[in-house]
Image 1 (cartoon, rainbow, N blue to C red):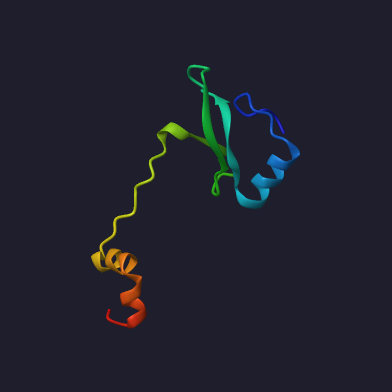
Image 2 (image 1 turned 45 degrees about the horizontal axis):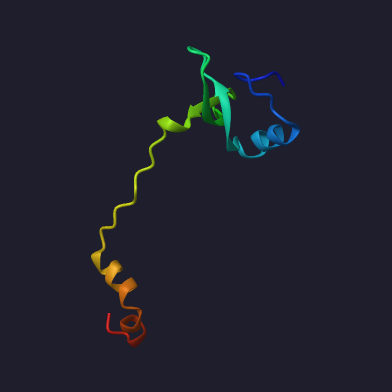
Length: 86
């Protein structure tokens, strides 16, 4: 396999990409426009089988929003749950 944006895949990396579709770790890749090294996640596109990379600083994971307020109270007062007062 050829180097991808300056990163040479190891045998374990190739096996991981074929098995799961993603590399499973963050790697340093060269930005194609600027040549700057950036930390990225690497995966294989399911439709085209091309290797894709997403810079870590562009990824946003939204915090889960709890809609059940009673859930917090159940966590705070586990003895009430044991007594069956919920």
